[in-house]
Image: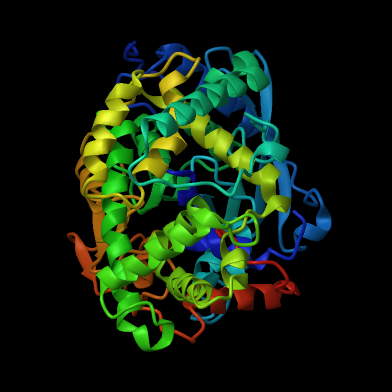
Length: 563
């Protein structure tokens, strides 16, 4: 899935609030701890044994939490440490890498209960991506929706391998990462395709050149084994985990490999884990789903034509968008925002309803002669180039390593030319984001067949918005089917990506009941859609980000994360 998917509600709130700060099959091994009916795992039993060795060592060593690096970036409520994991789990005594970990201890103070509440352990969060950095996650406990969970759990975030300070990956010089202004043809010419193929080849070669032989060890299965070592290092016998977007795939892999080590698991906005869809077909499905969300956004803008003046129908709004694209192709806004930058900014509106007012306002102002709002929304944030380059490198490495991809561009061209006829908005942008996988210089893995045997995995909670484009709803149905005993809660008629602890009280109550009391609905449940945003009113995310900044004593002097 595209790298922009790393922004969940929790992750984007924290990032926004911190914006003012600098910045072949495995043989069965029934004796291995936490393994029941071991599935066929790429790499075999050596990795299973290596994981057990690394976890045992981490349990003894623990994590020496202390002040966070760059102390003024992180408030006193949060502490940081590192955990050592093998680069290659088949060689647990070989080279090690250190993953950075953050924690806010359980407060014991539940605003809805009298007296102290008992600690229930650590809640580990993965924000998605791959390439998302969860180090800021513990700060989410300062927000009202999270206070009950923060009372009972240590909130634990971490930077997965390759991300941030955790043995960071890089595929190109960050100074060259932001390119633009760029075109974004919905029906690219043969010459344009040749240019993008050459760029994809060069990017893949750059990943190999800058990372070397270690590149092949950045995979979802390695991330899953790292999660098992982190569990042990935290002193937890069983893992309580919350994963969003790509984090749901990580959770599903963990549930398959280590079902006896799961305590509770919330999987929010589920990736389709079917091995035949990882990752090429999942991306085709995503491109198709974004066309539906793009239409949702345009219909909303049309309903508020009295505010934005972009047209009274979804078709008229699309015409206004195309007019802006044509104008930007001739004269980029601020010298940096071309059609591709506009499309990227509006793609964020496909992820989150809360982005709709800002996106519509910027497009409206631009077409009326004021380009400043669009430049503020869409221009490359060059101070964040190193972070963005790192995130993209990890995203690319993990997805390219995880599974086979078509190695002939003619296959990509055929499939996406056909798809672009009905879903032009994201299709080709998604191709260019993933095309380095066609020329990847490292052998690919075979995806794990995610599934659990009834009775081996505690009940898990799957969350999904019915119209989510980044992780289409069919993926949640597939994940629920494969994890025996799981229950699916659906936000009907909604499409925001990442729904836990947002503005939907029905969803939040289900998550609270599960995390705090272990209660799940007897069967799959539904919640009505959240209210749509209103022009000129602060969105839920803006309100919560302001509250978090106030709690941290920060000023809002940088544009919101995710833009």
